[in-house]
Image 1 (spheres, one colour):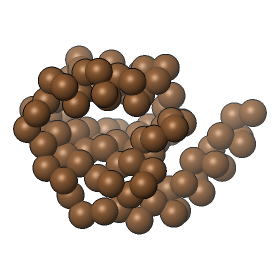
Image 2 (image 1 turned 90 degrees about the vertical axis):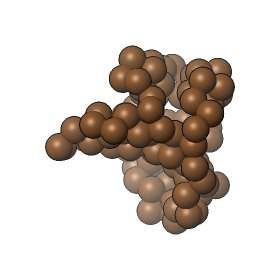
Image 3 (image 1 turned 135 degrees about the vertical axis):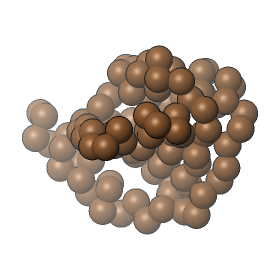
Length: 100
């Protein structure tokens, strides 16, 4: 579930309440989707169409849609340097506490 979403210059950044996924960045121009996992792993999936991204973003379970759709369908990807997720995890907890 999306906790926070910002869009600027055709770049969508979202933060999630997910057991495994922290955040994503989607570039509407290149259709690249970057997924940041809670363990700091960061991957760029290339050529993700906007409907598949929307399905991922709006899913009740982002991890399930990622595994069942994005990961299986988009095999062109690259592992990026690990991301320091400590501040991101604190922001997620803060956002979740404000919802309750």
